[in-house]
Amino acid sequence: MINIISDKDLAAKNLTAYNADYNTYEKQVKEVLNQVREQGDEAVFAYTKQFDGSDVHADNFLVTQGEIDAAYDQVEEKFIAALRKARGKITAFHQKQLRNSWLEPETDGTMLGQLIRPLKRVGIYVPGGTASYPSSVLMNAIPAQVAGVKEIVMVTPPIRGTTAVNPYTLVAAREAGVEFIYKMGGAQAVGALAYGTQSVSKVDKITGPGNIYVTLAKKLVYGEVDIDMLAGPSEIVILADQEANPVYIAADLLSQAEHDVLAASILVTPSEKLAHQVKLELARQLAELPRQDIARQALENKGAIVLTDDILAAIEMVNHLAPEHLELLVTEPFKLLGKIENAGAIFIGPYSPEPIGDYMAGPNHVLPTGGTAKFYSPLNVDTFLKKSSVIYYSAEALLENGRDTIILAEGEGLMAHANAVRVRLKDLGGDNFE
Image (cartoon, rainbow, N blue to C red; front, side, top):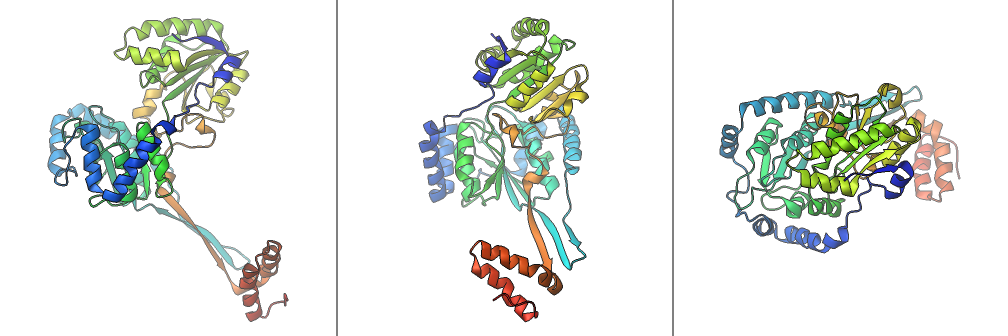
């Protein structure tokens, strides 16, 4: 069960660090990627048969309109209504992230600016099989759609032993504006998106979560295409004071612990009384969970209740952990918000539980893990945009700035750089720099 430890002990354990043993799987994943690069569809179909037991081929590889219509017939109306409500909130939030291209004239005869353009084609990976992850579809596809991506392609494994895709996933894809859905998963799907095959056109970027094979494949194809991030197991850190509700805290810790035996669920508090209350409440709630075996292992492996000397020490510990999800369950959370430097998403107050961010609030739930919130941001509209700088100099502006440009270029020993400016200055009757 979960232990109560000091902040110094937690610093030594570094529970949010995720050290994936990529070396164990790298040879196999490289082989899959190489086969897909060389053989295209044939390799994808063979690996889908090998790993998923599904007989996918050219005639049933792409999800048809008929399959999507059938999915709508299988999904409850209340689910579709909730999905559309979430879609509206996610869309509204991400629309606020949009920025326009700009070009501004200066008084010195220059114009400087930035062109902002969407990527043309992106691939989103959605875990599949018997599981359903419609929220993952929305969180990856909607920002791409808001950014203006022309073609969104989704890949997801078929239900094992069949050629069917989970109906909830299909409905979410249609609601999110996904144009093409291919029945494939694993490293072979990442390879197909990165290199292209006879049926699948190469994409510019791959986003979306997956198992270690998918994550490693994304790492290996980076450079051939762009990727969003390398995601690890889920994390939650709760910063709480003596006024926080232990029932809420235990429920929120378990909401992440049930994900994965490697999920990190951590309470940081200066209140010893609260720490013991939460430990008791965790035991009570854990006994009622359908996934209690997974949650129990997660709490034992990567869970902790951390006691600090005071609230400032607790904040310091939070910034050290840089968690994927952070809840502020303190008396005056907005006073502490400015002190939080590293967190993927911050949930403020007792009525903002982490699952509301997973599904309904609007901000993206694809977040940096493993301490990478120190330098990574959540998936967002910018993920699907590229930017080009724009520079215009008039003759007068070049005359004004050319001499200093030549001096800097020659200081770096790049004489051709200097000469590219010098020949123009000569034509303009500028100073002699011989």
